[in-house]
Image 1 (cartoon, helix red, strand yellow):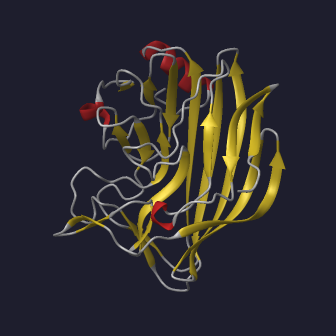
Image 2 (cartoon, one colour; image 1 turned 135 degrees about the horizontal axis):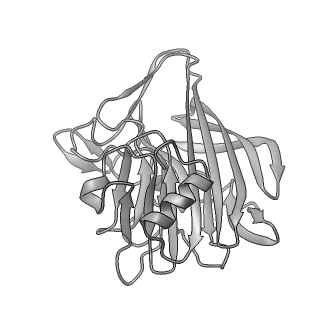
Image 3 (cartoon, one colour; image 1 turned 180 degrees about the vertical axis):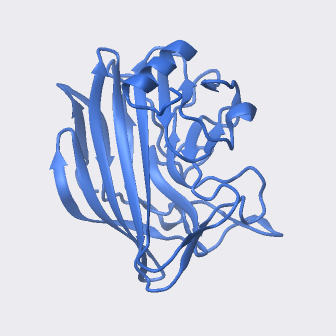
Length: 276
């Protein structure tokens, strides 16, 4: 494995980016951030946990790009359910466009079956908010390089209701009790899952994550703690030849358990939308 890139917030290492991982094919190898920590040193990511070995800290993962799995694990097949298939893609690091202690811009190639489907320009930046919180800003721009139409799907578009995941995904650590999850006007997994919100907070015993992004949120707290975006929440996302889909997700990482007022203040400080 190539030496990870350390990301710093002032004098503290708050994350490590593994851009050339050595992983088995069934995990859909891709770059990832792990460990990510609060300014106080509390870990807020988990890597290859026993319950879902294909969860890789913070990554960009899509379960269905024209039938190819860039998520890892089994593929949901309509009429069959989760099925083991030899359809896993790989995200390959193609070089740095910018690289500093506080962030980077990277080129990636999404390949499957020996050919490139997507080219990605990924930008990650670290920003200090105050003495107890910092922000991770991730922008992913995916361009169809095949010369023909592509579409992005999810288990939901393939027949599994409520499973519209695909895009940005953050696997949080599993503590003794599940984290709380809430938005500005809703509480609990059932209330926030599958819905857009200007910001969404996941609060553990010693940490809080506040997410801001444009898509409906995929949320798990009971089975495991994780939050992701949904590029194809209910319908496949069409991507014509040479077209680009861009998503920006900003995450506030704070020490301690924040309530709604504290999470809203953190969302405002990191620019989390008009309703923050």
